[in-house]
Image (cartoon, rainbow, N blue to C red; front, side, top):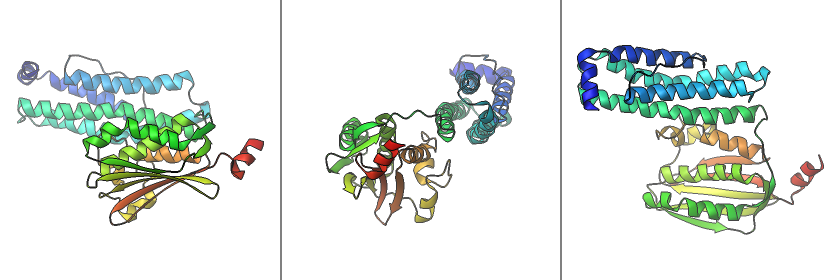
Length: 305
């Protein structure tokens, strides 16, 4: 790897390659998903080029496949181009730094290339989630509602995430009424609660516990996920479920986060005729999901429609 980078520095052919990658980024940011970056080497440069090409291919294939209606295609391109611009600009910034700063040594070039590659990988996750959101907005996300006991679902998630909590020396505590029966899509709701639990683990490292409470309130099943220590400031709480809200500490603090998890969670909960809220005090952060009970009047009315 070092010999390849040394070769780049001695002969400067990497400048043309970086320009080619930059061109691909600009095309993608403008909503042109047909352009492909020509892959000229087998190193970090080619890794970045492949990530950009993969992003373009996924976008183009989804449109050609007819995943979205004719009326929504133009808006899809506009939305995706807008939301992809930030990570693409970040990748471009590091590549531009490498091209313009000739004082960088081999290790610095490698360091910046690694960062650019990591950020380019984030595009794939972001695109997948943006597609999911678009399908939600246009009513194209299939939801298969069946009787579910949320207490069983959460017990299973707690067991699956045990190694994750253990890494942060956290203990997941459960206080759960059973059964907590609802009508819902188990796979989609698992994503909601997994997202909340991973957030609690990620930002609750200053505390010792993550609490998972489940109970019945009137005709609703209520699930609370609570972490202690690192909280979201009160002035940000009204916005944390907004799409790509940049002030949201729970979604911008980590490189692996796309910034869409809570937005998607809110959409899924609302498609189950439920609500999701967040509140904080001096020592803890509480997310609460409310869903109609299986035998609630609301569910009965929906069945009659």
